[in-house]
Image (tube, rainbow, N blue to C red; front, side, top):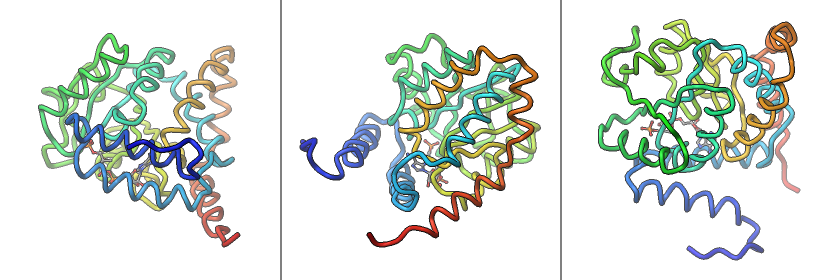
Length: 245
Ligand code: PTJ
């Protein structure tokens, strides 16, 4: 669709095009369209901008990813359609493994997401294989032994609640990006970035580059001071403040 730049909802409409293209290419699941719509609704309510609570979470996420021993960036169909280049860049600067790990199981879609990430510059992209996460009893439990299965910190944007809880129950530290502060994922992650992935990921990359000069003690201190419950509450307060203007 051709949208003039002057259109007040230009960014939102172009972002929709990315998700629709993702479905057409077989990268994004049809359910991804619904998830995107839910995200848009929450984005409205937080003012369609990166708020202070998101910046604080991005700082904690940057520290956690830099301190991790075996970090993994998990990619699903929505994230791959919206920010593929940025996910590749993020995995390179940490550095972290990239693993395709999707909720609506499909071997074909996994391969398509992998190829899409390679086209965008990724050298290696893992797919779930023989290993599996405990305490989740369906076909969404598979993970790669060199990736999520043996990771200590997982960056997993737009994740389903069950799988986020399963990652926590398997001893992983979880960083998510989720526009809905009331979702189970938002509540069960260690660090919840309540922002649109399209805005948050570049800021996370910048912050990681900036934090690389800090030693472990400073980074640990940033994590110690971080309180995810407070961040969720701040986001809810922001939503309550939404009013007609
Ligand atoms: O590719 P798959 O099979 O792994 O499927 C991916 C989706 C996202 C469809 C799947 O994980 C799913 O169904 O997720 P949920 O349970 O609908 O949760 C997605 C969450 O992401 C919701 O809380 C949305 O509000 C939020 N969300 C949607 N779009 C964005 C977003 N958060 C940040 N940025 C967005 N652009």
